[in-house]
Image (cartoon, rainbow, N blue to C red):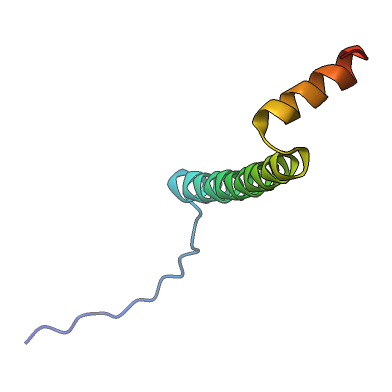
Length: 75
């Protein structure tokens, strides 16, 4: 039976370019989802405000008539 020498080598973990790209990609995804969430919230808020305006004006025709009279000052 042969005897084998046991040697220890210390290797330092090196960050590869692939790992750095992966982190950057994940950060881009988080930013994209955050932006999409805020855009959805603003869109829903806009729809709620528009429906509130329809109800308080008495319908879409009244709302458009009020908008035109407010914008141009006549009617």
